[in-house]
View (cartoon, helix red, strand yellow):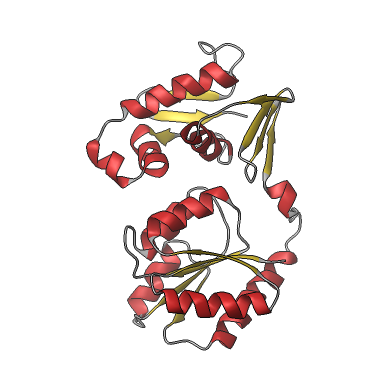
Length: 232
């Protein structure tokens, strides 16, 4: 069963797309603004994201760019803007396809099925369960269940601690600045405040919970003068 995230602030459009896709046996989640879309994409790995460009909170380009920081899930942009520049922008931000409104729902479904067929033929494609369980040495992270285990012992993390660890674990060896982590995990409002100490506090607490020796970390490392990264 394909899992689809539909993102549009026009609820009637969302309702229509959802009904049509569910008729084809797809599992559909919905989001009505950019912030909600990013949060849902972080919580669950989707087979397709249908993403409108004109959204409150964050526009579709910003959402697409944010999702590309932690996932390669396919994204189809939906927009009333039909200009070539908007299409180019969408593709440059990481979209896989582009459909201009008003659209025929049959075309949308055809594009979805084409991407699903293409992805299913990729060598080494993992099952949904495997995609949602990340294993790094003694550490296991269940993305869907939002649970973390060290040597089979469950570690109780707060929501933000889990979000922070998930982003780092799913992009091993990639260094994130404190500002970038603040924006992705806490949102633009926190970023506007500029208080990156929030990140430092959460990293310290996270290390106290998952590291055998927090002062000599095995998992979450510091790149001095830059930020943090998860080392495998």
